[in-house]
Image (cartoon, rainbow, N blue to C red; front, side):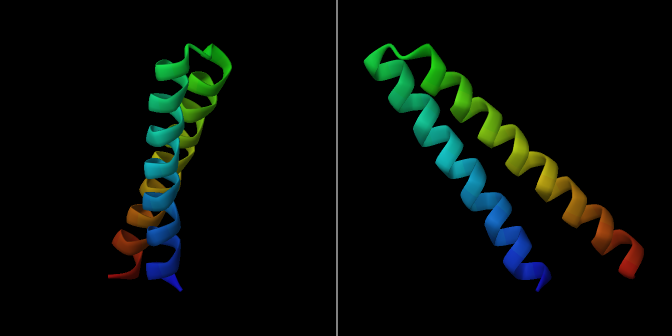
Length: 57
């Protein structure tokens, strides 16, 4: 299960980066902001998983 969460975090980061880039290309500020938000959410999820790993060992 932890690997699944780590994968979700990375996928969320990549999806956010793509959305942010697409938003910049078309000049859509809302899409750009949503992409940044998704990246931040992915980073937070990844940090949570790292903390969980630290306390497991």
